[in-house]
Length: 95
Ligand SMILES: [Zn+2]
Image 1: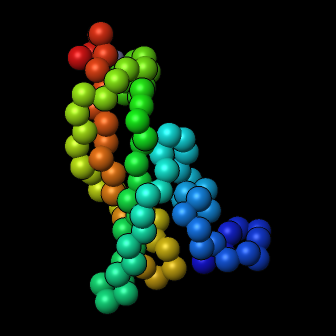
Image 2: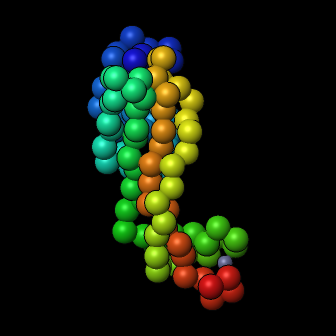
């Protein structure tokens, strides 16, 4: 895996995060490569919070989280998934 415009191999978690466009507070906590199934599952975590409300952007504490999985752009020939526990935010306006 090569970074666009670079010749360094893209191997570390932080580099994978940059390559795949993950921004703070998301960090890559693990990468599972399934050679047989030809897929890559990237596990990301949003850290301890606080998090912005998806409706209004007001930062609030996490009161719950729910596991989600997104299809990402493929990495080489591998099907790539992003997996995360998405924080649900406590917001005065939106609950
Ligand atoms: Zn809100």
